[in-house]
Image (cartoon, rainbow, N blue to C red; front, side, top):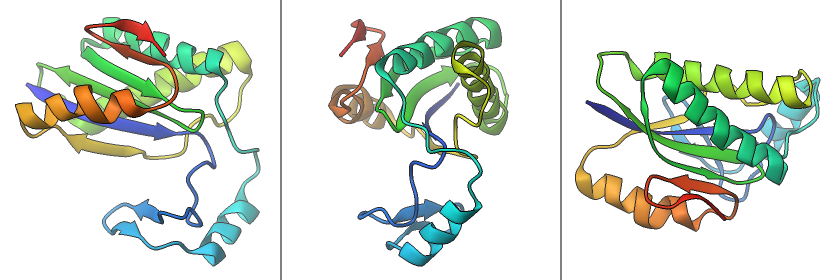
Length: 160
């Protein structure tokens, strides 16, 4: 069984000028870079996405719709105005990249249908394999509940 923690950021929300720096694939966390952030913003053709509370709840609902169609289990979803965290597992041998892309597409299509077509989510997104029961427990008891937006868990359902 595979278990992953996926994070999807709203389009344009996590730029290299963040105080905590930024992350790039294969390089990990890098220090703040205001010049690179300025170049990225110059290339953007759409506005930055900040999710409303209704959109946060819509993303949670869509993850569950996708789970039913794509055969994966949702353990926890936590939102913020700038991103969504999704903790899922699945039993087949699908690579995480395929499932992550499918979930991203499902969320983007649903937001587009409800609130207009546009680029809703940044490319890529974070993925972390859940390596142990201790790691899983930390995510569901500490890390994900500490997010400020809407949440859904197997134990509590939808809550804020």
